[in-house]
Image (cartoon, rainbow, N blue to C red; front, side, top):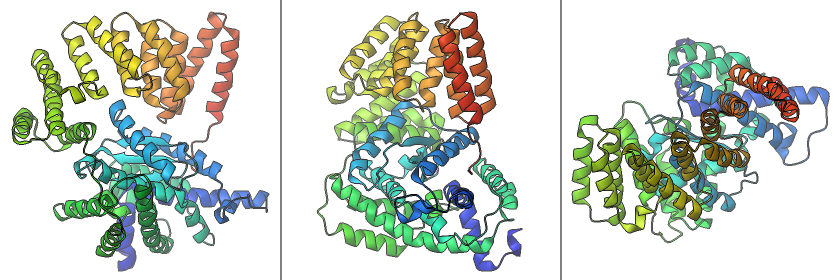
Length: 500
């Protein structure tokens, strides 16, 4: 159907719809536009706030973002490794106070794809592909991408999109959404067929606005980097990395399609960065092991893994790099069930990185695999006392305790975490498993319902919650039963479409 469009629109439209990130913008643009039309029909007074608040409020953005995130998780494979999630969280929370984002209720998602991509969705949803680590040399370069995405949120580009498009008629949202989900599931041809029923002219107009917004996000993102004490030159070098990735691929990286990088943008970024002195980049042990996780997952042949990292270990002189290769070799040994060898390699990590959560967790996993579960639990409990806010240590300690007769204790701690991170499906899933082993079926059903709900499986969530209500009734826990009924009503009435 695309061949029936005028040539210029056809080319730009293909670029527009070939990536999830740009399609996100399209869905939310029309969803929010629909919300404006409905709102205007019932209330002629705009909400107080910035000029875009008459079109969509920040509370609406927040709700739409969470609806979208549940749908994304239902359609896309995501990374559920607490080490990866916590790393991205730490980077964001380091720079967020120095950005112009006012609402810090963020949600993070890491997509299990090797391509270069990152995106921000209204309501504070920030996502990356794990493959972003393959294209960055250091933490500052990763952070420059995140700072850019924060800038899109702070400038409310999605709400401004509505303002620019207010005179255009909305397309059928359900049809567009279905098409985008097909594209996200790698069924691009079917996705294009559905989207082609939309208005190509309005898409062309929106692309024209996005060029200005990219420049605006570059400026704001670099300002955030500078205020956070990071190297502003990282944005320029990251742009150059992205273009290098484009040169050696048949298809441009998704980030370049949704955030087109030109020589002018690179030149502008370089000129702005030149006004500030370069700062030492952070190429930490934690960054390096995540980069190597991505390499193992997407780019390295399985049979050559040990050889590749042994050679890298021999050729580097930097301590963090040596330690990261030792860690990766131990992780490879663990996956190959060579537990004694893995433990020896891990014990050769320097004292500077031996107490990092990633090292401690792998150490405990190796001990558990060798039948030394008591030592594994003691190791993580000691680490947890020193780092009571460590999300990765808490999850992995709960796993090992659950496997070795301490499920009730694990459940108690996980319940506290579920109160702190109530929108984290990783927490709820582990709580469900631990509660089930502890034979607390009521809690297991409740936790599993939250896990299913956050992953976009509403009907499964409702069934699990009904099981919890029935269990509460059998046990005579009537106060809990009433609270569960209230939660069932909330879930039942929750919106599943990106419209109001």
